[in-house]
Length: 390
Image (cartoon, rainbow, N blue to C red; front, side, top):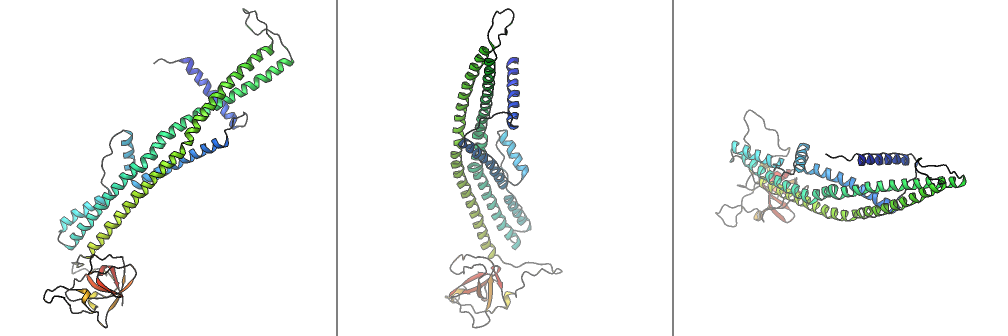
């Protein structure tokens, strides 16, 4: 490899000189060209945008993937420009375990049926979570990362160049100031000593030499000022582009919020459907005769409810119609609704959590259901959604 020793030495000298100058400015021993207030505001706004974008991006990554090992693995795949392997979500894995357990315990048993239904819901929740993670990574994380790795790197590079241009400008100003002071001193005290080597016959006054030095310093100052102004304009245009970055991030933020709302709405709907399915399952449990099952509720069992004779619009068909049944004049019970319940059809009664309703039972009715009344509305309600009161 061919090294340019002179250029390397020159660059090292410039770097050392700028480092000394920068230190003197920090200590207040050297003058510094100040940027205008608008430019300083742009710099402050850009730094704030960069810092908060980093924090938001990192915390969003934690939200989407709480597992730090998985995040490190995905980061390595991205740096190696390789496709990140598909990963099963925790909810999907739980649903898989529940399904396998149901197959072993017996899918026809009450426990097996419930495991299958809950497992299917968990798989749906996991699939919705994966869609949310994928959508957020593309529509929200990617634009933030592109800003930090693209636009911000360009801004940082141009700011470093501007800093060097400013240091060069201040060095030229200091050099010109020193040359003018020396010229003024030489003009006041002429000195015609020879300053050239012996093989040159040249006699010039010190004031003339310093005059040339002043002209040279003024020329260097004009060049440095031009380069500084040009670089300041380039940097200013990039910093003003932060406003466009905010607009782009605002659009991405709306998409992220929309994806999150869709994800939670899906999860809510899946769980509401699961509640309805579980409300229709028999609650009969087979318990070992030697063991005492824990009490499920402190309320009296539904068997103490008054039993009415079934009334059917079509005699002989055996179908119970809770709507046509009149409540007993006495012996009905009050119940407090534990959870919201949406009626599946016209024979059921929609419930709201914490409301009080009147309930009673019908002969031949599923033991997991009761007839509920609220005002002039009547319908079947699941026992699991109620707390029977004395």
